[in-house]
Length: 352
Ligand code: NAD
Ligand code: WQD
Image (tube, rainbow, N blue to C red; front, side):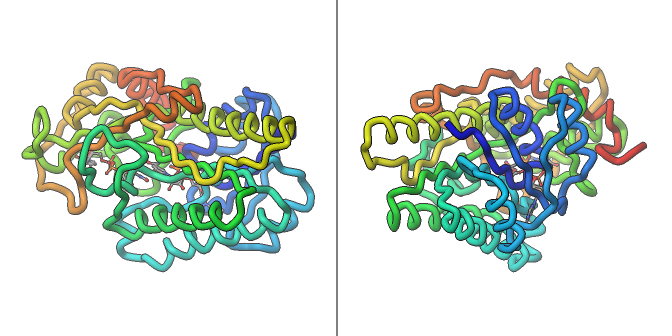
């Protein structure tokens, strides 16, 4: 079976961790990234962790000619498509930038894939497509709705993939709906490196712990949750990376059973949640990080953040049943690995 995979956005936070997991699982990867939210240093570190240099191409998914060059030089089994912009607040201020990058970019990629008859795709979707969930835990058949352009861009791509699967049964399309990815590689060499002040909880907490930020504002303590703060399903990024390997293995099995049995059935559009299935509150996460880091994490309660929901956690049964994958690592592991990355790299990938 052909094990060559194109990884768009492979220089980013989730992409780098997934490249390591793919390499360990015997996949042969080519990374394609425009470095708009990442750095060559991340690629260098992945190369040194896997002990061989990564096949890296600097390019934009909106650039069809550049993609065609890549597809004509390599024979891919499929694509893992991470490339995209992800800052919710920025998407509200600059919606066209988000639709152009995330939606137009994905259309260009799909057109080139189609032209080269590469029809296996794993796409980075998000639990954000569930909006404010009607019931918990959230399963893949829950209604979808979004309140910001970032979320809309993910939902729009999902609709495009659904339409594509209906139009042509040879596509095999797995949007993975990530819950809240956190943590870092256990080596402390790669991790999340936000520009400016972090928007997300875990990097904010770790920057308070390391002394870069003064105190955490907890957005809301009057939610209908155990302690009044928001509840999320945090998932370790290395577990998430394994989820991508499991999705690709599934596509490979489907492809080989299709060719050996001569059947025409394909995967079509198959969304799968990647979460732990467990909810953790903001205060629980602060307490766990304090314990692991042995650092004070001062915080204050502040008003709810616009657009936030009270609770969100996955029903992870489909991933377990179909992909034979489940999250293994605990909240303590997530805090330990984040803290190792943060303390070893207080300025992220930039030299100190
Ligand atoms: P990231 O910003 O670290 O990685 C995205 C990568 O894509 C970056 O390296 C960036 O340079 C690259 N990129 C962006 N636009 C590109 C373009 N037009 N052409 C080529 N490369 C481009 O983000 P991440 O946290 O690793 O997220 C990866 C994917 O997962 C994104 O699509 C994101 O929306 C999605 N996602 C992330 C989270 C999360 O909390 N981190 C949750 C759900 C979904
Ligand atoms: C978690 C909890 C906040 C920061 C976002 C995106 C979502 C997905 C993952 C990409 C909430 C609280 C946060 C802070 C706080 N990304 N919080 N103080 O909002 O669940 O999801 O990232 O797809 O689309 O919306 O994650 O980490 O921002 O917030 O109190 O400084 O922490 O209110 O309850 P969220 P988050």
